[in-house]
Amino acid sequence: MLKRIGKFLGNSYRVPWEPQAGVVADLDFVNRQYYWGGMRRTEGEFDTFTGAVFGSGATAGLTGAGTAADHNITLAWSKLNISAPFVVAVVFRPALINGTQQFLVNLEAAATPSQNRTSLVIATTNVSRHLTIVGNVSQAQQSSSGALTVDTNYCQATLIQTDLFRNSLNGATAGTEDTGGALPTYSLIRFLENVSNTSPFTGAVRRVLFSQQVGGAEISQVDLNMLSGTWASL
Image (tube, rainbow, N blue to C red; front, top):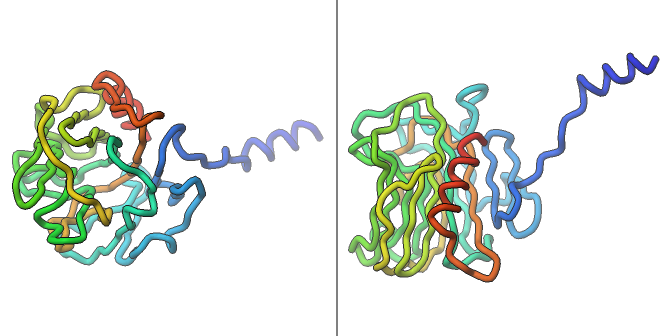
């Protein structure tokens, strides 16, 4: 009898989902579990959540069509109750690398968001890139050293702070620290596409995380690399 009970429990029990330790927001598109504001959340609590398609297995996560702007997945910045300095990280698995810019996550201002934003993208040079622009003027741009490859899991983690930007990819520094640059006044987080709901990412966004150091200190490059290396396996 005990053996049968043990077998039953072993086959049916699942470890309850929990957000990553120390994060302000954890958007897990693989398990479709979400956390912000100190609480578990649902897809109905996003500001918009239309056109979402979820992959499975190796391609699990929120997937982009790659051909049409039919997604509208957004979350109000105010819901995170976070301010700079903070870290934004995206765990993703590209299915297409072809010299076109693909948007993973956009942090947008309310006014003229195309000219006032922080974006994590796959650049036209096929590298992972962070860029922040204010008033259509580049404030910071940092890229990985080598081209990405398809069917590989990556985590890009970026420290965002006025006059201090650091970037990391899968445990390695991705671009030179930038110590000069302003920030937009963030209003909205957009997933998979740019502000016009075009240039979609082809692949799977597995997870998006936001974290903030206790006391508001900036995270070091060493610790940022540790985060991106650890979270790449999520």
